[in-house]
Length: 493
Image 1 (cartoon, rainbow, N blue to C red):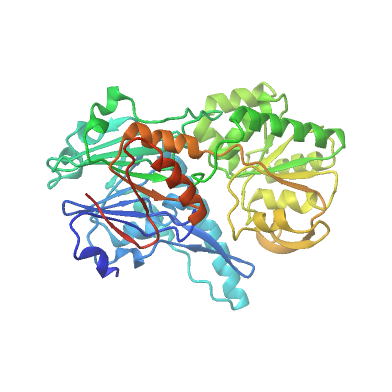
Image 2 (image 1 turned 90 degrees about the horizontal axis):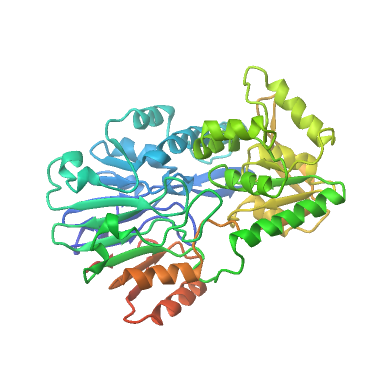
């Protein structure tokens, strides 16, 4: 597959993932005879009532040698198809940060469970959506593999001697990793090849401080030395918000949330915050606590909060009465069910409800939505990225009083059941909690890094790319700017 990628060029970059905007992220680098894949995620689409996961182009590059796979962070659009990729490439070493490794393992198991449920449901109804992307055996093989290397941030692989970690053939290379500010354990990548050419891959990146993640502009000089002083740097950056200046600071976003919570509480309603479990549940829960509210966290958001904030901190928040978790005793699910019933019936007072998934494709947020959407006093808030094909997008845009089908989990049947739900409550999208840099932060990073070539990906569209590249063009000695579009080869310097 993709024969054109492996002929005619010496050093190349190709983006194999997202067709437009955020998708199944995957970047291929061929440098000095090495093939490096950065990320291997999934995209989400719908086939009628079914959720379908897509994966990067190239049929997993079967038959091609992949030297190194690097996973930048623990979001499914960056690692969701990794077990299947590793099945076909036992020769590859896989690198991820130590802080991302546990959330990745947990999320892969959760994702496989959802894919299996969707596939089994489609088979019963005679609809072809394809088998799950990977198997439980694939997942076990990945989690037990000696080829997985977990790195601390910041660090240079093998203390600037990658051969000691990757084996023969890596003499003269240097590969470094540092925090990107996007999420706990999310990382930037610094590569120097044997010809002393430098490559800077930002990963998903954020320079403004978030509630529990410190923003990062560039790696500190004490770590990277003169890396950015060498001419000819190739920089690869995301630009999710490249077309948008920051219009709301994180503090202003918290203020907006506080006003909405107060407004709904005064009118006697309830608030559901449908958030992605990774990063967003912790962030929103801490924001609610800062505002003086006691949030109720449900579903996998509980597990991710323990990964991100630490067991001791979470337990202290719960013990001090600042945080409520849906009871975690799996042997007695009736305890959590009673909590949910009491909260719905206003027996516990006003508590913002935080539950994944942020797409409304499934998860506990959907079960809460079934009861909250029909009541005009309530509000549903989406604080994360809204995917174009998602149910959350439909709910946000639909006329009040219309009905939508949600996949509500049935405890009796032990499976999701399509359920008609009338949407009559207020539905909001708060964009200020983003963990991606806005245009000003992205451009400032380019100014400081001083690349000769800038490859841009994660753009929502041509208008956004043009707006970002126009700002970059205003810099002193601006770089050559290239849009890393789907399956387009970029010859590197």
